[in-house]
Length: 137
Length: 112
Image (cartoon, rainbow over all chains, first blue to last red; front, side, top):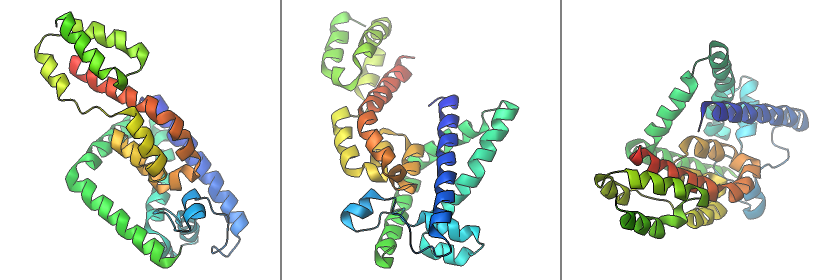
């Protein structure tokens, strides 16, 4: 993937992420238990997917309730950090005409392809998924 | 490389590439020396139709992207419920082309 493609993709993705969050914030109100399901898998099978609940996690996190956010879905915190960090990083790169984000992205991809990291990551995701199903997210 | 060898390689591997890429690969193979042939045989090509099946079954979790090597996009797909379901459906149409593109990149990496 070229630098331009990657940066455009991340900016569009984070932009739609923020739009989704703003929409959810106003549609969910103060009670994050109710809202529109964005997950086709959950709608079809009735079982939550590994990333179900990330919107609720980020919205809870935005109110400063870190412990409550962690109990909904820890993956949401990871996604929240990405949403906050990536546009700033890309903005910095675009202003300075650098490719530091692309460089780190490619390195992270190579790192995640290594079995010693990939296998524990998959196990963690699966454990989190089992926890999600257990919690009826 | 001999043209007989090149044609044999292309005949057995044509399903892994886009049709417009084949003449370019043929040209590059004819220019390359014989030592590259063994390296080419060891490449783990991904089959586009197989990836379509994976995308239909596990696309929601980004498994298709993980397998072809787009790990970053796979993580993004996994963390967003398959891009709120939209990306999952878009990828059913894109994944075969992307698989062929990645196969082409692998060949070009060896041929330089």
